[in-house]
Amino acid sequence: TKLATMGTLVFLYNFLLLSLCVCPQIAGKWYHIGLATNAERYVSRRGKINMGTYVITPLPNGDLDLLYSSVYNGTCRKMDKVANKTDVPGKYRSINELTIHVLSIVDVKYDEYALTHAVNTKENDTYIVNKLYGRDADLSAEVQEKFRQFSLQTGVLPENVMFFPKSEECTSA
Image (cartoon, rainbow, N blue to C red; front, side, top):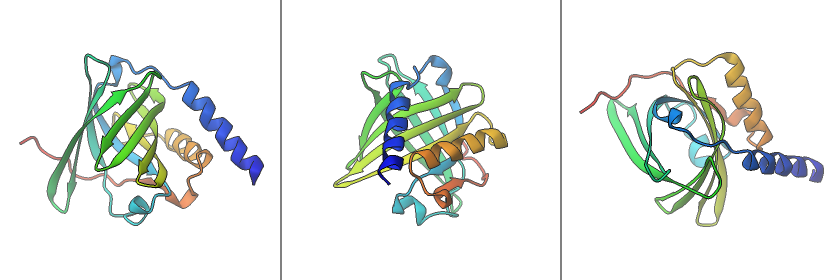
């Protein structure tokens, strides 16, 4: 309905305006615990995605270096990208594989969890991806529910809120 759509838009506008300043405390290792999206490329892989890790390094110019690693079919996969800061504190932009990612850090407790919201555009397809990260591989039910509720408010279908099973970590090469 129009009212529900307006409510979602107002909610999104408000959280984007209140995006958090990223401080040096964001640096370090984070476990990628949850993902919520209606994008088919992720939904079709539900149950096949395992928990991975990110090492986040704030750069001197305010950008973030994001090093992701996970084990898939016994092989270590690593990806590195830089999220470029924008004029809005806590909001970043990156382009890879013809996809434009606009990432906002929505909520963070630096010693426990971080919740992000991304609007991704590839060709004429725009979709959102919410992610939940933890300093530890286990997060409280309260934090997981906060992520679930946030994701529902951003339009993600309940069945598309995913929490990843723990898996072995990549070892340094």
